[in-house]
Picture 1: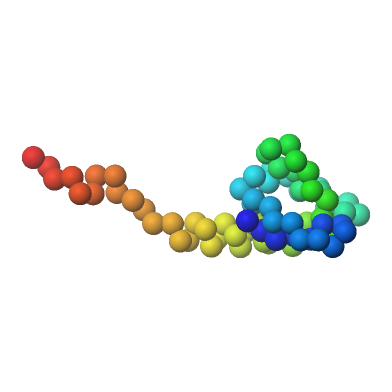
Picture 2 (picture 1 turned 135 degrees about the vertical axis):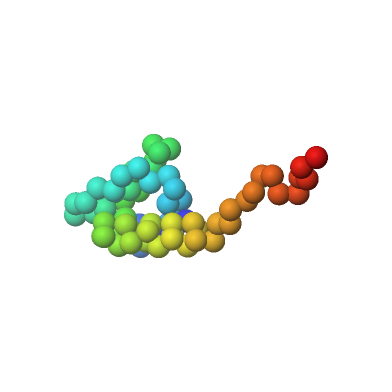
Length: 74
């Protein structure tokens, strides 16, 4: 989840995994896979940086799970 600022100044937290596209313009438009759209004050470059930082954090904390761990070969 990333924190962004809506046009009216309120905070909105967006699931970074659902972002399909980001449109630059006078305002930044975030398009989600759910069909929802958010107009935010944050520039495109900042939104992209927040998404990259989020994914670095999430995927660096992942641990590989061995599905065969705990099973003994007979």
